[in-house]
Image 1 (cartoon, one colour):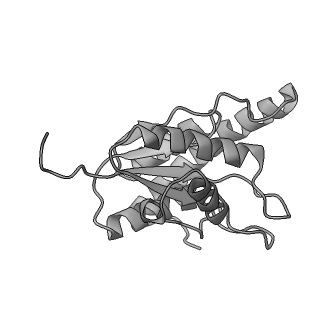
Image 2 (tube, helix red, strand yellow; image 1 turned 30 degrees about the vertical axis):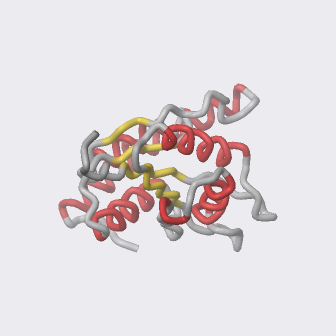
Length: 176
């Protein structure tokens, strides 16, 4: 066995809605469960839940961090990004957070199956080597029409976010 410490693996968990009472939705809970299961197979996981507050609700990242703690993940293995309001903001904020910590390794990406391709592409465009966390097996919605809504939404959101990210890199995109 080598005397060298294992380098951490950052696992970015993309947020999902939080209920008005502050409890996680099934989608949010499933994303955390998938990330935690993946992290248990890693030597030194660093969980990065991302997602801000909407409509006065608790931040998605804070709710995910509580779920991780409830699953036995220590605080030292959790770094919260609790300001991002959407997927692109999450990519940018997590990238800045990880780089500020001196992290240069690959980034594991955790989300739902319908959302994962966009997250992976955006993290790659942000300059990361990415690892796909196996998504939860449950569908994003029970009704077929609602599942298609999420898929079609992603079909529009992916090229839009790619365009915004490329424009940012060129210095031409508006900043909030």
